[in-house]
Image (tube, rainbow, N blue to C red):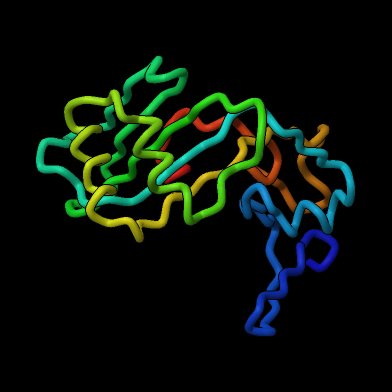
Length: 171
């Protein structure tokens, strides 16, 4: 029944109809912008989130976090048998996020007092200066209710953002 269906077009130029479409396309949601133009007004926080994928130390068997490390939270997140994500959430009220070519050394410096498995992961950055360190200012936003229009429902970061707490969704 066309009155009950939501039409969907995808990049392959194919179309289909569904009873319900779930929009989970993240913070930069195109679907949200199309359905709720201008309704989502994200704001910047005073925090910067850093992350880098490194070789997983054999001693890393679970999520590990250290709080109050130079005013931030640093974590180690196992991703697979071979890889892990080293993360840092730190308050930074002034200045911009540093350019990519400076991030490796800055991250090493910012977590220089870390110990244990986090120090092991940090030390990998000394030998791989090409490691791609991700850094971005943390933003927040909340789409006003309701988070649906007709047969389309937005969920997750498409509807609301939450400051990262070193969870795997940021890895």
